[in-house]
Length: 499
Image (cartoon, rainbow, N blue to C red):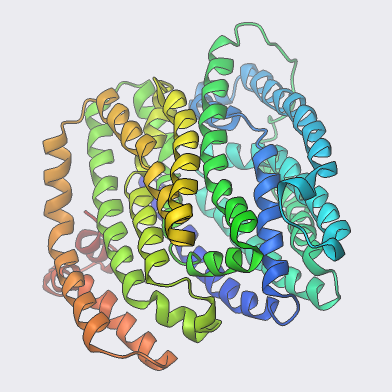
C-alpha cells in the first residue's frame, strides 16, 4: 500500500473513530452526572490538570525518534536498538525526577486547588493514580511511535479508538460501583495496560528485530538540544492550557469548571481533530526534509493547509450555530456558559486549529529558533491578562485574557515554519482562499439564517438542520462528484473531495 493511502486510511479511521468515541462520550458524560455531582466532576478536571503539568516526561524523544526511524536503513540497523535503549533510559531518568515532584505536590494538593474537606482523601488518591497513568503512558508511547513512524496508522488508530470507547464505558461502570472520581484514572490505567500488551505482541510478530541494545550517550548533543527545546515548548503549552482550568476552579469554583468544560466540549474537539489529521504527516515531512525534497514538501504543506483552514472556519460557524442548542438538549441550559464565553472559546479553537499544522514542520526541521522564549513569555502574558480581565469582566474576562494571551506563539511558529521551508505568503494564502472561500461563504449565509431566523428546540430539528448545514458546505464537491465521468467510485470520490 502506498504511503498516500496509508495516511488517508489512517487519518480516516482516526477521524471517523474519534467521531464515534465522541458520540459515546457525550452519552456517558450525561450518565456520569447520575453518579457524581458537577462539583466532583469539576474537581476531577482540576486534578487531571495538575497531574498533567508534572507528568510530561517524554521530553520530545519520541518526536526525535520518529525523525530517525523513518529511514529504512537506520531502522533495520543495530543503531536502532541503541537509539531505542537511549530513548527509554532518558524517559526513565526524567520519570523518576517528576514522580518525586509529584509526591511533593501530593502532600500540598489542597493548597494548589480548592478541595472540599470530605473529598480530600479521595482527591489525593485520584491524583496519585492519574500521575501513575501519565507516567506509564509515557513508556507505552514508544511502541506507538515505532508503529506510526513505520506508517501503521490504521492499526494504531483502531487500537486507540477501541481503548477510548472502552475507557469511557469502564469509567461509568466503576462510578456505578461507587468508586467516585477514582473511576476516571483507574479506567485509564486498566485500558492502557491492555493496549500495551496488544502493541507489544504485534510488535514482536511484525518487527522481531526490535529489542533493547547497548546504551550509548556519546554524541547525544542533537538529541538533548531537541529534547530540551521540545520540553520547554510542551511544558509552556500545557501550563497555559491547564492554568485556565485551575484558575477557574480557584477563582469561581468547581461548578464553573464543569460549565466551562461542557461549553467547551465541542470547541476543544476541533483542534484535536485537526491535530489528528496533521499527525500522520510528521514522518513524511521528516523524510522529505532529510531528502531535501522541498518542492514536494511545499506542495504537501499547501494541500494540508487548504483542508485545515477551510474546515476550521466551517466548524467554527457550525459550533456558533448549534452549540447552545446541543448543550441545552444534552445536559440542560444551566450548564451552558453563555454567548460571551462561547465566542472566546470558538476564537481560541479557530486560531489553534488553523495554526496546528506549522508545529510539525518545526519539529521536522529541528530548528526551534526563539519558540522556547515565546512560549515562556506567553505564560506570563496569559496569567497577567486573564487575572486583570477577570477583575473587571468576571469569568468571561478570565477566558478572554487566556485566549488573547495564547495567540503570540501561534503566529510566531507559523512565521518560522514558512520561513524554514521557504513558502511565500502569497502562494499559501491564494491557494487557501481559492479552495476555502466559496464553501464558507455558503456556511456564513446558513449561520445567519439558522441563528437569527429559525428556532431549534428538539433533537430532530437539530439533526436535520445540522445535516443541511454540512451538505450545503460540501455542495461544490457534491456537484463535482455528480458531474465526474470517472467510472471507478474511489477515484471519483478522491478527485471530487480531496484538493
